[in-house]
Image (cartoon, rainbow, N blue to C red; front, top):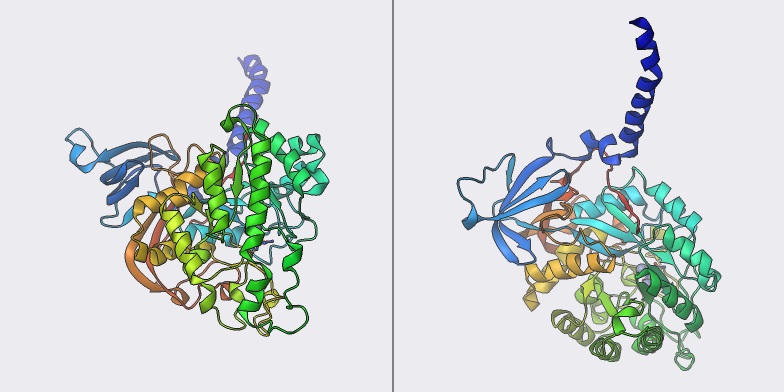
Length: 504
Ligand SMILES: NC(=O)N[C@H]1NC(=O)NC1=O
Ligand SMILES: [Zn+2]
Ligand SMILES: [Zn+2]
C-alpha cells in the first residue's frame, strides 16, 4: 500500500505544478477576486436604453464569464427567461465601451507625463474600455520587438482597461523588412508614422519611400498604417513669426505656422502612395488611416474622392476640433495648442457636417499630455509650448455635449467611438453590444450636467486640460471591461485587470 503511494508522488507533484502553472498563467484567474466591483461573473444588466448595432432597445443583456451571452428585448421576455443577479440601470444608457485608437500614455520612460495606471483609470472613469497606445512619447519609442516588450511589461497588472499598441514606422526600421516583420509578429496592431517632425527625438519623420516600404509589408499582414498627415511646405515657412514681428502669446500667430495646406499636401501624397500599393482588387492593398484630421476643406475632398474610387482609407477627427474654434482661444492659453491646430469656426462647422455625413469615420482622443511646466502656462508662448491636448477622461461627455446642437444620436456615438475604431484596430469581439462579444460596456446618463472641475479627475495633470472650467452633460456611472465592473460612481476595482491586446 505504502509503496503504491510513493510511486504516485512524482505524478501528483507534476499535476500540482501543472495546476499552479495554469493558475498563474491566466490573468483573469489570478486577480479574479479584485478585478471587479461585482461579486459574480454571471449577471444580467437591464435598461430602457441599450445601444445595439440594430438600434436602441429596452431589455436585458446577459453577461457570463466576460462575454455577452444573450440579449433579450423587453417585449420578447417571457416566463421562460429567468433573470438572475440583475443590475437595473433604468433610464441610464448602456452603450458599448469606447475604443480610443489614439492615446499617448507615455509609459515607460515618461510616466511622469501620464503613465498606464493614471491613464487607464481616467479611461475607465470616462467609459473607455479599450485604448490603443501610440508608439511615441514613451521612452524608448515602440519601434522594435524589444521596445514593444518593454511596453507590455510596463502595462502588465497596471492597466484598468484593455490596451493595444501601435508600432512606429521610422527611418531606422522602414527599409529593414525583417525588423518590421519582427515588430508586427510581436503583436502591434498596425504602424504609425509622421510626415513632419514629431517633437520626439527618437521618433523621426518618414518620407515617401519609408511609407511605401511600410505599406507593402502592412498589406501582407492586413494591418493599417496610421499617419500624422502634415507636410511642411517651404513657401509657407516665411510667415514672419520667427522674426518677432508676431506675438507668440496670440493663438493666431501659432495657427499661421501650420496652415491647412500642410494637411492637404500630406494627404495628397499619402493617397497616391496607397493607390500604388494596391495589388489587384482595391481591397487588397494596405489600409491607410489618417489620424486627427483638422482641415475640413480640401483635405476632406481628397479623402472623399479616394474613398469613392474604392481606396482602403479611413479618417478620424478628435473632440477638440469639434468643440473649439481658433476665435475663442485666449492669448497665452497654451492648453489649446495641438497639431494640426484647431482652426476657425467655419472649419469646425464643416467638420461636424463631414462627421454626420459619414465622410469622417470615427473619433479618437489624441490624448497627448505633458508636464505642466512644458505647457508654459505661465508665459503663454504658443510657439514654444508642448503641442498636445489632454482629454482622455472627458471625450464621451464632450462629444455628447457639443453634439447636441447637431442632433447627435446614441447610435452615432456608438459608431464613431466603438464600432468603427474597434474594426480599425482589428478587434472583432469589441465595439458592439452583440452576442459573443466581450462584455465591454459603459453606463451613463446623458441628462446629468456637471462641472468638470467638481469631478474627481484621474489624469496625472488635470490642470493642463483644455476642458477644465467647462460644464458638460453626460455622466458616466459604470464601466465594464470583459464583464468586470472596473469603475462605479467614483470608485475603481481594487486590481488593474485590463489585458494587453496583441495581434496574432
Ligand atoms: N508627439 C505628440 O504627441 N504629438 C501630438 N501632439 C499633437 O498636438 N499632435 C500630435 O501629433
Ligand atoms: Zn499626431
Ligand atoms: Zn497623437
